[in-house]
Length: 186
Image 1 (spheres, rainbow, N blue to C red):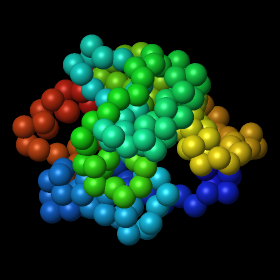
Image 2 (cartoon, helix red, strand yellow):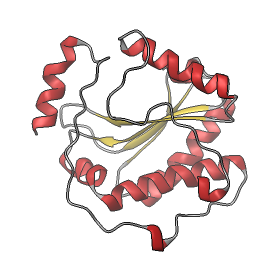
Image 3 (tube, helix red, strand yellow):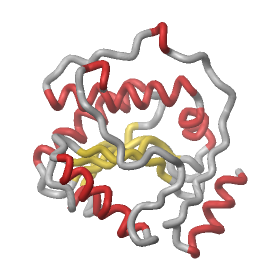
Image 4 (spheres, rainbow, N blue to C red):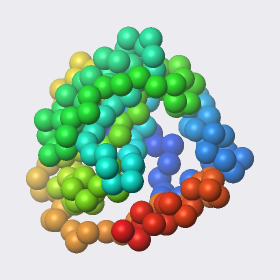
Protein backbone atom coordinates (compact mmCIF):
# COMPACT_ATOMS: atom_id res chain seq x y z
CA UNK A 1 0.00 0.00 0.00
CA UNK A 2 2.87 2.36 0.75
CA UNK A 3 4.30 1.58 -2.72
CA UNK A 4 0.96 2.81 -4.07
CA UNK A 5 1.38 6.13 -2.24
CA UNK A 6 -0.83 5.43 0.76
CA UNK A 7 -0.06 6.12 4.40
CA UNK A 8 -0.61 3.00 6.50
CA UNK A 9 -1.06 2.82 10.25
CA UNK A 10 -1.27 -0.38 12.28
CA UNK A 11 -3.13 -0.79 15.53
CA UNK A 12 -0.96 -3.79 16.38
CA UNK A 13 2.64 -4.61 15.51
CA UNK A 14 3.19 -7.71 17.64
CA UNK A 15 1.65 -11.13 18.08
CA UNK A 16 0.50 -10.32 21.61
CA UNK A 17 -2.42 -7.99 22.21
CA UNK A 18 -2.12 -5.66 25.16
CA UNK A 19 -4.62 -2.91 24.30
CA UNK A 20 -7.61 -2.07 26.44
CA UNK A 21 -8.35 -3.19 29.96
CA UNK A 22 -7.51 -6.84 29.52
CA UNK A 23 -10.48 -8.26 27.59
CA UNK A 24 -11.07 -8.71 23.88
CA UNK A 25 -14.01 -6.31 23.76
CA UNK A 26 -12.04 -3.39 25.18
CA UNK A 27 -9.13 -4.15 22.84
CA UNK A 28 -11.43 -3.96 19.81
CA UNK A 29 -12.93 -0.69 21.03
CA UNK A 30 -9.44 0.77 21.45
CA UNK A 31 -8.58 -0.21 17.85
CA UNK A 32 -11.73 1.40 16.46
CA UNK A 33 -11.06 4.55 18.51
CA UNK A 34 -7.48 4.66 17.22
CA UNK A 35 -8.71 4.62 13.61
CA UNK A 36 -11.30 7.29 14.41
CA UNK A 37 -8.61 9.48 16.02
CA UNK A 38 -6.38 9.03 12.97
CA UNK A 39 -9.27 10.16 10.72
CA UNK A 40 -8.50 7.11 8.60
CA UNK A 41 -10.11 6.81 5.18
CA UNK A 42 -10.73 3.08 5.67
CA UNK A 43 -10.26 0.45 8.39
CA UNK A 44 -9.18 -3.09 7.54
CA UNK A 45 -8.99 -5.72 10.28
CA UNK A 46 -7.14 -8.88 9.18
CA UNK A 47 -7.81 -12.23 10.85
CA UNK A 48 -7.48 -16.01 10.56
CA UNK A 49 -10.66 -18.02 11.00
CA UNK A 50 -11.12 -21.34 12.87
CA UNK A 51 -13.83 -24.01 13.05
CA UNK A 52 -12.48 -27.31 14.39
CA UNK A 53 -10.83 -28.05 11.05
CA UNK A 54 -14.11 -28.23 9.12
CA UNK A 55 -14.18 -24.74 7.58
CA UNK A 56 -12.04 -23.54 4.71
CA UNK A 57 -11.70 -20.46 2.56
CA UNK A 58 -11.60 -16.68 2.77
CA UNK A 59 -14.38 -14.16 3.42
CA UNK A 60 -14.70 -10.43 3.99
CA UNK A 61 -17.19 -8.75 6.33
CA UNK A 62 -18.70 -5.26 6.41
CA UNK A 63 -21.18 -3.65 8.78
CA UNK A 64 -24.87 -4.21 7.89
CA UNK A 65 -26.21 -1.19 6.00
CA UNK A 66 -22.78 0.28 5.21
CA UNK A 67 -22.80 0.68 1.42
CA UNK A 68 -19.18 1.88 1.33
CA UNK A 69 -18.10 -0.93 3.67
CA UNK A 70 -19.84 -3.47 1.43
CA UNK A 71 -18.13 -1.97 -1.63
CA UNK A 72 -14.71 -2.20 0.06
CA UNK A 73 -15.44 -5.78 1.16
CA UNK A 74 -16.39 -6.71 -2.41
CA UNK A 75 -13.25 -5.15 -3.88
CA UNK A 76 -11.00 -6.99 -1.42
CA UNK A 77 -12.84 -10.33 -1.67
CA UNK A 78 -12.68 -10.28 -5.47
CA UNK A 79 -8.88 -10.18 -5.42
CA UNK A 80 -8.51 -12.44 -2.39
CA UNK A 81 -10.48 -15.20 -4.11
CA UNK A 82 -8.68 -14.70 -7.44
CA UNK A 83 -5.11 -14.35 -6.18
CA UNK A 84 -5.00 -17.05 -3.51
CA UNK A 85 -5.77 -20.75 -3.73
CA UNK A 86 -8.40 -20.34 -1.00
CA UNK A 87 -12.09 -21.13 -1.44
CA UNK A 88 -14.21 -18.01 -1.98
CA UNK A 89 -16.72 -17.78 0.89
CA UNK A 90 -17.87 -14.38 -0.37
CA UNK A 91 -18.75 -11.15 1.40
CA UNK A 92 -20.91 -11.06 4.50
CA UNK A 93 -22.18 -8.58 7.06
CA UNK A 94 -21.72 -8.72 10.82
CA UNK A 95 -22.12 -6.53 13.88
CA UNK A 96 -18.44 -6.82 14.88
CA UNK A 97 -17.10 -4.06 17.12
CA UNK A 98 -14.38 -2.95 14.67
CA UNK A 99 -17.03 -2.57 11.96
CA UNK A 100 -19.68 -0.98 14.16
CA UNK A 101 -17.49 1.47 16.10
CA UNK A 102 -15.42 2.94 13.25
CA UNK A 103 -16.42 6.19 11.53
CA UNK A 104 -15.10 5.17 8.12
CA UNK A 105 -15.78 2.29 5.71
CA UNK A 106 -14.50 -0.78 7.54
CA UNK A 107 -13.95 -4.44 6.75
CA UNK A 108 -12.88 -7.54 8.61
CA UNK A 109 -10.99 -9.98 6.38
CA UNK A 110 -10.90 -13.66 7.34
CA UNK A 111 -7.88 -14.77 5.32
CA UNK A 112 -8.41 -18.51 5.82
CA UNK A 113 -8.97 -21.17 8.46
CA UNK A 114 -5.90 -21.64 10.60
CA UNK A 115 -7.14 -25.04 11.81
CA UNK A 116 -7.65 -26.42 8.28
CA UNK A 117 -4.55 -28.16 6.91
CA UNK A 118 -4.85 -26.79 3.35
CA UNK A 119 -5.67 -23.22 4.40
CA UNK A 120 -2.94 -23.30 7.02
CA UNK A 121 -0.39 -24.29 4.37
CA UNK A 122 -1.32 -21.13 2.44
CA UNK A 123 -1.38 -18.94 5.57
CA UNK A 124 2.06 -20.06 6.75
CA UNK A 125 3.87 -19.91 3.42
CA UNK A 126 5.68 -16.81 2.20
CA UNK A 127 3.99 -17.09 -1.19
CA UNK A 128 0.55 -17.44 0.41
CA UNK A 129 1.14 -14.46 2.69
CA UNK A 130 2.30 -12.36 -0.27
CA UNK A 131 -0.74 -13.38 -2.33
CA UNK A 132 -3.13 -12.54 0.52
CA UNK A 133 -1.44 -9.23 1.37
CA UNK A 134 -1.29 -8.27 -2.31
CA UNK A 135 -4.97 -9.13 -2.80
CA UNK A 136 -6.01 -7.00 0.18
CA UNK A 137 -3.85 -4.13 -1.11
CA UNK A 138 -5.30 -4.43 -4.64
CA UNK A 139 -8.84 -4.30 -3.27
CA UNK A 140 -8.08 -1.27 -1.13
CA UNK A 141 -6.47 0.53 -4.06
CA UNK A 142 -9.44 -0.25 -6.30
CA UNK A 143 -11.84 1.06 -3.65
CA UNK A 144 -9.82 4.27 -3.30
CA UNK A 145 -9.49 4.66 -7.08
CA UNK A 146 -5.70 4.57 -7.16
CA UNK A 147 -3.23 2.44 -9.08
CA UNK A 148 -1.85 -0.59 -7.26
CA UNK A 149 1.95 -0.69 -7.23
CA UNK A 150 3.27 -4.05 -6.01
CA UNK A 151 6.43 -4.48 -4.02
CA UNK A 152 9.39 -4.78 -6.38
CA UNK A 153 10.84 -8.21 -7.09
CA UNK A 154 14.22 -7.06 -5.87
CA UNK A 155 12.82 -6.67 -2.35
CA UNK A 156 10.78 -9.88 -2.37
CA UNK A 157 12.13 -12.50 0.00
CA UNK A 158 12.77 -16.14 -0.78
CA UNK A 159 10.35 -18.79 0.48
CA UNK A 160 10.98 -19.39 4.17
CA UNK A 161 10.36 -22.57 6.12
CA UNK A 162 7.03 -22.91 7.90
CA UNK A 163 6.88 -20.68 10.97
CA UNK A 164 5.20 -21.51 14.23
CA UNK A 165 3.29 -18.68 15.87
CA UNK A 166 2.15 -18.15 19.43
CA UNK A 167 -1.48 -17.04 19.19
CA UNK A 168 -1.98 -16.63 22.93
CA UNK A 169 -2.46 -13.07 24.07
CA UNK A 170 -3.32 -11.31 27.29
CA UNK A 171 -6.90 -10.59 26.19
CA UNK A 172 -7.81 -14.19 25.42
CA UNK A 173 -10.60 -15.48 27.67
CA UNK A 174 -9.54 -18.29 29.97
CA UNK A 175 -12.18 -20.63 28.50
CA UNK A 176 -10.59 -20.34 25.03
CA UNK A 177 -6.99 -21.02 26.01
CA UNK A 178 -7.26 -24.82 25.89
CA UNK A 179 -8.77 -24.84 22.42
CA UNK A 180 -6.23 -22.36 21.07
CA UNK A 181 -3.40 -24.39 22.60
CA UNK A 182 -4.73 -27.55 20.87
CA UNK A 183 -4.82 -25.68 17.55
CA UNK A 184 -1.29 -24.41 18.09
CA UNK A 185 -0.11 -27.95 18.87
CA UNK A 186 -1.62 -29.22 15.59
